[in-house]
Each structure stands twice: as C-alpha cells, then as structure tokens.
Amino acid sequence: MKKRVFSGVQPSGALTLGNYLGAIRNFVELQHEADCFFCVVDLHSLTVPQDPVALKENIKNTARLFVAAGIDPEVSTIFVQSQVPAHAELSWLLECQTYLGELRRMTQFKDKAKKQEVVTTGLLTYPVLMAADILLYNTDQVPVGEDQKQHLELTRDLAVRINNRFQEEVFKVPEPYIPPRNKGGRIMSLTNPAEKMSKSSPNPKSYIALLDPPEVIKKKIMSAVTDSEAVIRYDEETKPAISNLLVIYSLCSGQSIEDITKQYAGVGYGQFKKDLAELVAETLRPLQEKVKELSAPGVIERILEAGAEKARAAAAPHLRRFQEKLGIR
Image (cartoon, rainbow, N blue to C red; front, side, top):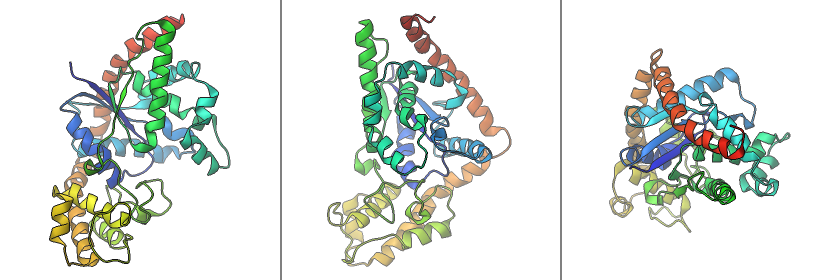
C-alpha cells in the first residue's frame, strides 16, 4: 500500500513563492508516490482575530492555489479542516493526554505570545490540533518545515504515549518529510535572509505572493538585499542573501546553482536580479491563469465538498477507535 501523507496550509492571506517552491511543488510530486491529504487549516488561523469575509475568501483562494499549482483533486484529497468535525473532536481528546509543560515549552508559542497583547488558549493548544490533523488520517509522513519540527515531535510523543497506555498501536507514529535546501525546503525573506519568507511579515517587500503581478515581482526582486561584494557566489554563511536568490533561480529554472554562478561570472547583481524577476514571473504565469479559471462560481466549492466527504470517511474509523479505547463510544 502507498504511504499516507498529510500536510496543511493556513489560509492567512496570499501564499508566497516560498510556500510554492518550499512545499506545494513538493506536494505535486508526492501525490503520485503516496496517498495524499492536503488541508486548508482554517481552524488554526483562528488563534488570532480574523475578518470573517476575508477569511472565507482566503480559504477558497488557498484551495485554488493548491489546484493551480498542480495538485490534482482526482489524485489527492483537498479539503478544508473545519468541514471535517473530527479534527476539533480529536483535538480535545488529545488535549486530555497532553501535559501543560509540553505546550509551554513550544518555541513558537513563546515567540508569538511575546508579540500579542492578549494570548488565547488556542495559541497554546495549537500544536495539539496539529497533532489531531496528522493522527486522524493514520499518517506515515508529514512534509514539515524546520519551524514546525517541534510540533511534529509532540505529535509523535502523543502517539507513543497513547500506544503505550493501551499496549497496542492506536495511532501510527508519523515521520517528518523535510526536503533538502536544493528542493526548496526553506526560502528566505528578500529583506532579511535570516528569516523565512512569510506572508505574515509586516513588510510586503520581504515576500513574493503567488498572485503578485509581474511588475510587482520585478520591484520586489530588484529591491532585495544582497551584499557589498557584487560577486554572484553561493555561500550561506557569508553571502546568505545572494545565496537565497540563487536557490530561487535554481528551483524556477531547473539549473544547478553551480551552472548559474558560472553563467553570471563577472556579471553584476543588477542583471542577475532582472533575469531572476522575469524567470519568477514566467514561472508563476500559468499558475495565475489557472487561478482565474478556478474562480468561476462553484468550481472550487465542488472540489472542496468532494474532498471533505473523502476526508470524513477516512478520519471516522481512527477517531472511533480512540473513542472506544477511552470508553466514550
């Protein structure tokens, strides 16, 4: 049997080039090797206040981008988290197996709590809901970024704890799938190469949104930070900014970083950035055209309805099994 893969993306605004090169493009490859469940995790986005109208549209836009990027709803299961109530139900059952100290030690919780005036319980228990997302589908592998590795470790710990308690495999213990850097595992900010490219950044110049028009892409790349040594060379330690741009160029073109550096030997940053901007715009053009097609009334809604039906059917037996073990079914 094929391995099962689960991954989720928050609908918190436009997805970025980093999301595409670092995750979604890998999803497209994985769907032909594994039984894939790709989820728009809208419940996770509620840890901070959301505009209901904007959230509803962002959910659909995220799903459109999944399909436009090449995730085939006939091959993969694409659905919205809140349309499968088992996610919230299993999350509560897992919270009752999770220790408060484990959640307080989560690096993301501590970092995000510092930035918020009011810290909700949902922010604290966010990793448990993520664990429910994963364990609900008997997941073998989870494509996960470096910033989510700690949350996946909690998921694994919970699965092992529950299995040990009942002396049998109630939940499968999932493994991380972390693509190497040359596969786009971590695309960095255009304004600060020490930070991951993120749609939550307050500086829109730091990221390229997948729906940015070509002229906006050009402005952002031309203004991307580099360094004083105008030599195009890959070195993550001493030249992180230009190294990040080289990774983007390599992933969009299919060329090796070594070939790209040879191609631009003796050429300044200006020409390199101009060519990169055109390359990125051309890479995103077919995706943007597909999104327009998927924006016709009812198209993405039908895909998500079918996906939710498949997800509910897949989740039900795993939730029921745990309920029976706990004595509540």
